[in-house]
Image (tube, one colour):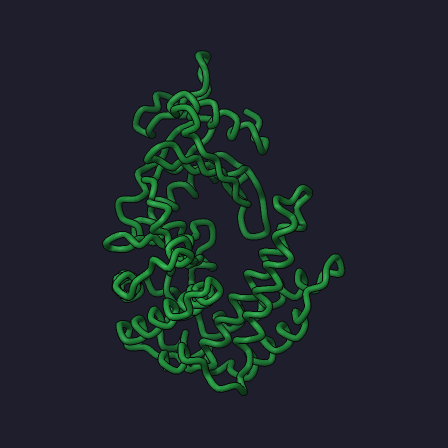
Length: 348
């Protein structure tokens, strides 16, 4: 079997078209996956791609990461991830069956993760756009996240490792954000200010690891991954990199709060941080929250621009403006001399 970029995708489309009604099959392409929506079901196929932080080129690796995705997402989205589907190509045409229905594993062309389809209007990003988030939604999410972080496996990350990882991400950001192929106003200033802040507050950051605050977290806590069910669920945990999941909870929470602020719902992030601070009996210094926010903003700016490094980037007009918005968020967070925002004041 040839593991080229489109072969499994074409087979999956053919197999799913057999079970979908007219106009029912919807396909979403991401940097690393194809996602198929059919009725009440969602199927995710990992692309056979290699990046600096992952390698999905081998079938057995994709299977292993599918299994890890199921395991990890059961923590914050119980009942949403239903199992693995085997993509096969027998003589009578492509087929997709549950793992238990596979007669011979040697005939499996690829593996997909099977999930329940969540109501789009209750995803946090959509709900904020429609001003449909109420305080009870946020408080319910706080309860879910507090329980998760309280019970999450503690990560074996030393104080030096914790700080060094932030510096390593900063170095990666400098390589991409200052690439001469584009100009991002304020990027150099934000990078330099974050560098200075990480150095100045190195001890405060190290104390987070010394206090055992680093956990095996979610890794990509964004509004589009939160569904405001009763209780809320959080999907799309990073399965391919334990290091990227080894986080201070308030690193992830600062990230989510920033995304909510960018969506025009600043109060959601404020309430999340305050509620989690109370529930976890933990209130990091204001400077630590600011550094985490700036760090996440510059990571998102870097990942936005990284799309333009692809040979054929999708929606190329999107990425530079998006990177600029994240750089602006980083600069705002790095105003150490300014009075703290209401959100940060209440989180302290």
